[in-house]
Every structure is written in structure tokens, then in C-alpha cells.
Image (cartoon, rainbow, N blue to C red; front, side):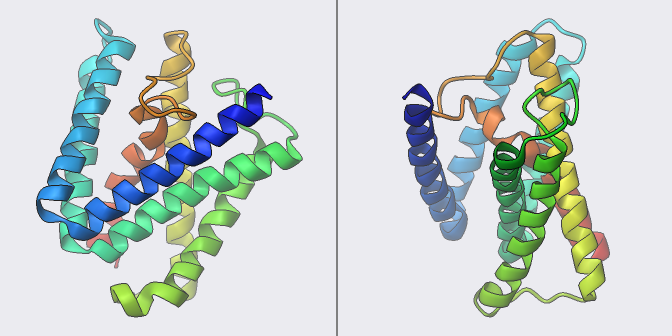
Length: 215
């Protein structure tokens, strides 16, 4: 019963997050600026509470700044690829959760006991499938112009999903160092803002580099 209630909270919160995020991203301008600033300052507060007075505190702030600047710039340069990057990150998380819970199997690392090899494979599969679906059905709407072949496209998605998974593990490592499960409670069923965007923090700078230098 407890797990069912948590799942309901997670699904409901996810729907709200998707609606608000999509609205702000598409509308841009003031809505997007306010949205990304709220995410940034919310993340800073959670990071401060997580590791204040620790040697890596400043390093985390610097990386958060790089990530937010990358996200802001990429959204303004090409909203299509920005949405694509978010989709890959989201489906990577969903694929890891669904496949990992379904097949379980050997643990991926001690850093995050819930992560399994099957979940990691699921992340890659869901990311690649979602990437192709996005290009096939939404390319005419968002006008992505790819100057790469199909194999390069798969490699790009693979890299973006891998970086997303690494970001998830890195935040899990810092949470274990400080003996906490979640970075906050602002998002019912998810925890804190950092819990929700851990993969994006790392995959967004990666996506910016891929778009500007390899596409």
C-alpha cells in the first residue's frame, strides 16, 4: 500500500513537472527565464544543505552554473535539440527504472544499490527508441536538421544516455557520503530538485557541446 501511494505521488508529480516545464520551454522569454532561475536557486539551496562546509561545495556550485548556462543557451539556440536532450534524459531514467525493476539482476555499483546492469541497458534502449520516435514524428514540427548519419545518431544518443546515468550515480555518491536518501522534499514521490535533474546537470553541458561542435 505504501509503495502504491508513493507511485501515485510520483506519477502525479511527474505530470505536473512535464506540463509546467513544457509550457515554460515552449513559451520562452519571461516564463522560461523565471523557470530556469527557480530550478537553479532551488538546486543551490539543496546542494548547500547537502554538503555545506565540505571541500567539494564550491566545485558543485561551479558545475551547476555551467549546466544552467548550457541549458539556457541551448534552448535559445535550438529549442528542438534542447527538447530532444530532455527527452533522452527522461527516457533514460524511465527505461532504467522500468527494466531494472522488472528484470533486476546484478547490481551495477555499490554507490547506488538500486542500480542494476539490466536497468542500465534499459536506459540505453529507451533512449535510442525515444530518439528515433522524436525524429520521425516531431521533426516536421521542430525542424531538426541533422548533418549526421544513422550510426552517428545512435552514438550521440548512447553518449547522452551514458552521461545522464553517470550524473545520477555521482549525485547518489554525494548523498551516500552525507547519509541522506533525497536532497529535498519539494517534489512528492521524487524528493528534491537535484534528485529530479541529477542526470540533466551532466548531460546538458554534453548536449550543448554535441550540438555546437558535432552537428
